[in-house]
Amino acid sequence: MSEQNSCEFCSNYVYDEEYEEYGCVVNMDEDDLARLLQFKNSSCPYFSYGDEYRIARKQ
Image (cartoon, rainbow, N blue to C red; front, side):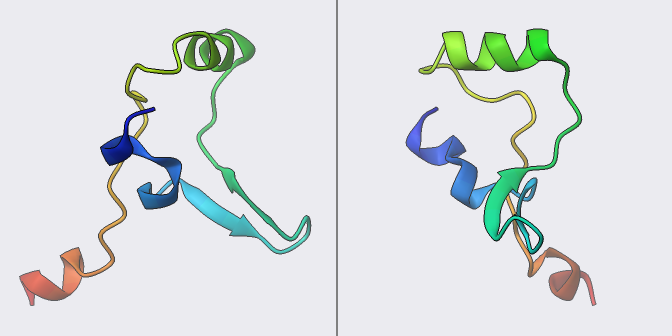
């Protein structure tokens, strides 16, 4: 994944308290995951920039 589509900036990358680690919460099947891992330089189609201030700007 490119620098701008890094998982660390994605809103789907959340902390799981049970496993005590971060992970992607997108519901994808094995084929989608294999496709993402195969083409590491391509951008993730599920990437959503995690902008926590988006709602505050609308107020």
